[in-house]
Amino acid sequence: MKNKVVSIIKKVLPAVVSITCSKFLEKAPVPFSSFTQGLFGPSSPPLPQNFNPFKKEKIKIGGGSGFIVDKNGIIFTNRHVVENSAAEYFVFLQNNEKFKPEIIAKDPINDVAILKIEKDNLPTIPLGDSNTLELGEDVIAIGNALGLFRNTVSTGIISGLSRAIIAQNSSGGEKTRLRGLIQTDAAINPGNSGGPLVNLKGEAIGINAAMVYGAENIGFALPINNAKKDLEELKKYGRIRQPFLGLRYVSIDQELKDRLNLPIEYGALVISEPNIYGFENAVIPGSPAAKAGIKEADIIVEFANKKIDQEQTLSDILAECEIGKELPLKILRHNKEKVLKIVLVERNQ
Image (cartoon, rainbow, N blue to C red):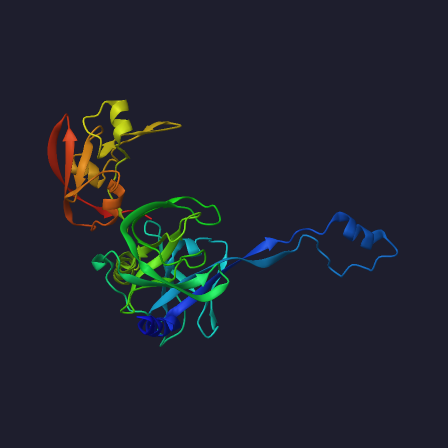
């Protein structure tokens, strides 16, 4: 087993990259007394020409990992690793060769980003099938731990499947709900984000994404099939397409059922939202939901033959649906079930 793991690491490591993030930040100003003495004090040395105590300089503010999936320079990482539009990013190969990548696509729902560097004949990691994973399967996590320790390797097993968490990046940015995650006890630390989770065939079956602060041996990876789908969309359409339903809703739980006297404690209640001008429509005119005949106060109980509940929300199911395909949608209206047909369209960017 040990020799096999070592062999796999040697095979995949050349395709793992480090990603750095730098930004121009204002230097901490020199204390007023320090430079006024230079200006007015006869005993202090003269200040440098063009001295500016508020000068900005480029500071490294973060880092992450990634891995090459195409020999022509296509790299998978997390969206949150490259989310700062005001920052400058660089990719470092194993031989320390440095490249400024083009960020060619971001998937905000699945936290995937696809980068491109200008170099050919690169080593790659083959992509596995995350739909066939089993509990207890051995895995290897590789990445740039803490942004400091490159080529950090940890081993473990798959501890859970189809996990859902609310994630927030280390800079305190907006929270994102991630679903369908692979849980592993292989150590995943800040900076490991974007690195591969590899099986014993040497295939990437996940992208390291998150850890639980204050807990040990609980890490999460994005299933690789989400990233594969994004790459296929990018190659076919030149962008990552997101399906659009066109309604507003709240997820129903026991508390909402009791408060609104609803007939069931699961599903999605179609409801308008208040704003400063009044209320926004529960069903957007001209949308797929409107064309299918969905109305305010309907309760959507199933979509694409999948039950909607707290573990599997409407948005979770929607993210996996195919644009342009007719799908069944079961609603509860006036305590009577009704099945509608809906065709999703692409969300406007």
